[in-house]
Image 1 (cartoon, rainbow, N blue to C red):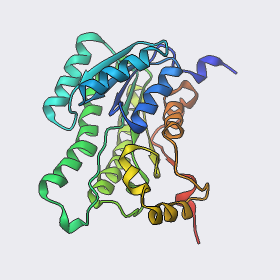
Image 2 (image 1 turned 90 degrees about the horizontal axis):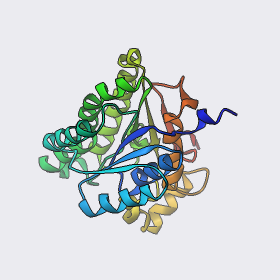
Image 3 (image 1 turned 30 degrees about the vertical axis):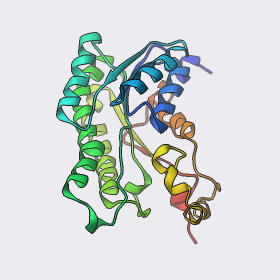
Image 4 (image 1 turned 120 degrees about the vertical axis):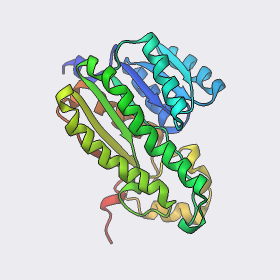
Length: 256
């Protein structure tokens, strides 16, 4: 086995929403594989804590405090990156939020918040990152989506809308940016053991129904999603682009 094919040594990875849940696990997994990590979150204390934690894994770690759901926050992110780096190897668009309501119950502000956080940030950050990824010569983007973008899972419809849109964006950018040697892929998890779904999983009836629909018989752990993301960023996946890898314990192919 060529060890250079199965690691991320020396790569620079920007991971949004990287202080909790799946984003934190992605940052840790990539750091263990040798990548230097740019940690991004709105929470100053968490950015500081996670940056120190990542550095203990033997790589460089840089923290940027900003709200990527806003235009101002996205500009600040890339102004900060451009001051320190002249290229970027990996972008993981992980930041996301959800408000679980019936469609007729959303306020416009709630609806807009979900779109800005999940969809608009992803599109704009990818565009800002493009020139930096192009300089890498082997740039990689991974978008963290959800099976909610592929089927109905009783969560809020705006959340499902944004994830479906990002599935399509993944395919478009993969084709458009292939000439720049940028690969673009996505992962779509099913329920994962993160703070975002903790309340739902504490409802025993709902949890039992989720498990009944999941052939593997449990929800995912964040590191199980992170490992798939890491693979899509490795040289080992160099011929994979435009794909959406479903990480769901068999949920999406589970018939009657």
